[in-house]
Length: 134
Image (cartoon, rainbow, N blue to C red; front, side):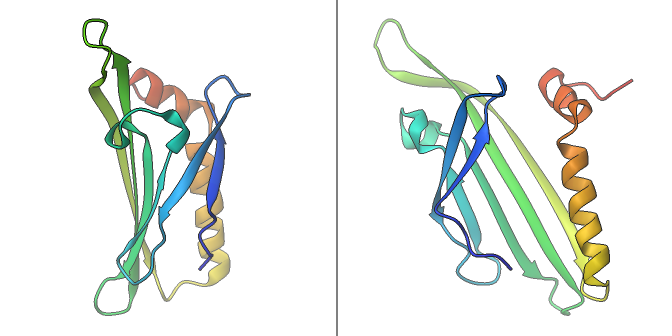
């Protein structure tokens, strides 16, 4: 288990511009979430991108259920009213069922390989186009 940092910096699609996500809450107990929000994006709080991670036992103590969730609204400024509005958002979720009986070395491989697969250009293209690689 790691301590939640106060901020996490990621790159925008241009590969150079930083986006900083700020910790809003840390996972203070089993089942609670670590919630990050892109505060510098401006606009109403509900229109800012979020990312969260939560984890809990399956009840029997044999599996840790780790859930990831993210949401990125599309915002614009209404030319008539000058108000920031949203016309939709993209969201994602992923759940990992992590057996407590597996060796830590295997779980480290699972984490390394699956996060690297999500970071490939193929995964990024699938998300940005809405189509799986053919």
